Image 1: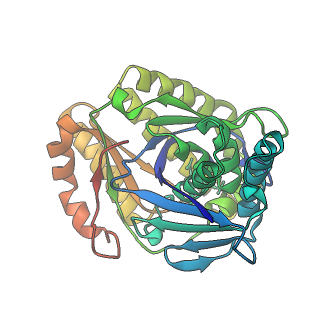
Image 2: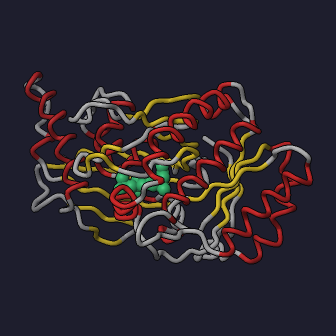
Amino acid sequence: KVYRASTTAPVNIAVVKYWGKRDAKLNLPTNSSLSVTLSQSDLRTLTTASCSSTYTGDDSLLLNGEPSDVSGARTQACFRELRVRRAALEAANAALPKLSTFPLKIVSENNFPTAAGLASSAAGFAALVQAIANLYELPDSPSELSLIARQGSGSACRSLFGGYVAWRMGEKEDGSDSKADLVAPASHWPSMRALILVVSASKKGVSSTSGMQQTVATSGLFQQRISTVVPANMALMEDAIKNRNFPQFAEVTMRDSNSFHATCADTYPPIFYMNDVSKAAIRAVEAINAQAGKTVAAYTFDAGPNCVVYYQEEDAATVLGAFAPLLATAEGWKDGSVVNASVKLD
Ligand code: DP6
C-alpha cells in the first residue's frame, strides 16, 4: 500500500524583511518580519508526499520534474522533525501504520518559473512540510508546523498561512518560540493587490542565506536596523494592517525595503540587489504617488532586482497605467506564459 497526501503553499513577499540569523543551524532570525501572501491561483508550489513499506532506498525529491538533492541539512531537519512527531503518534497508538519508518517520495511543482526569483524556497519548504504533515496525519497547527518549515528556509515559516503573517523572532536558544502567526486573513483587506515586475528572470547574485550572514558580520548599520528600525516598523505595520491604513502600510513597506537594501550596501564588500530598472521602478512609484497627491502605491525588493508593488484595487488604473512603460522594459517570466502579473491575495 502507498500512502499519499498533496497540498499547495503560497508565495509570500515580506513588507518588513527578515535579514540576519542569530543561529544559522536552527535558522533563528535577528529580527521579526511580516509578509503578505500572494494568491495561489497565480503563484504556488504543489507538493505530493508519499511513503510505503514497498519503497526502497532513501528519501527522494522530484522538483519541477528534476531529481533534487535531499541530503542537505535543511531538508534533513524537516524530514527528521516530521518523523519524530509521527513516531510519537505511532508510539501512542499501536494500530497506526509505521509510516515514520518508510522512505518518503516527494514530488513538487511550481506554477511559476523558479528562475523568476520569487521566493520559491518559501513556498517550496512550506508545501513540503505541510504535505508530509498531512501524510502523517499530524495534529499540529500551522504555527507549530512553521517551526519546522523555518528550519528549511526562514521565510518558509510565513507560507503556512494566507493573508498577513508575522514571524516572531523569539528569544529562546532552542528556537521553540521562533514561529509564524496570522496577523489578519486576506479577507480583512479585500482591495489589496500586488503587481510583480520581473526585472530579470535570471538567477544570479548573492544568495539570501550567504548575503545576510555577510551583513551580520560586517555592517554597522545592521545593528541599528535590528535594534530600532525593525521593532518600530513591525509595530507600525501591524497597526496599518489592523486599520487598513494604506498610506501607513505603504510608507513602512518602502522604508523597510530601503533600510534592508541600505544594510546590504553597508555590507563589506557591498551587496547590490537592485539594478537600474529596479531603481526606475522606485522612481515610478514616487511619481505615481506625487501625481495622485496621496500614497497609492508601495514598492518592495527582496534579494534580487524584481519589484513588487502593492496597491489597492480602486487605484488599479492609475498604478498599472503608470507602470506600462516599465512593464515593457522588464524581462517578464522567461517561459513566456506570464509577463508581469497583477495578483490578488489569498
Ligand atoms: C530578502 O528565507 O531565503 O526575502 O532562511 O537562509 O533560507 P534562508 O533565507 P530566506 O531569506 C529571505 C530574505 C528576504 C526577506 C524576507 O523574505 O523576509
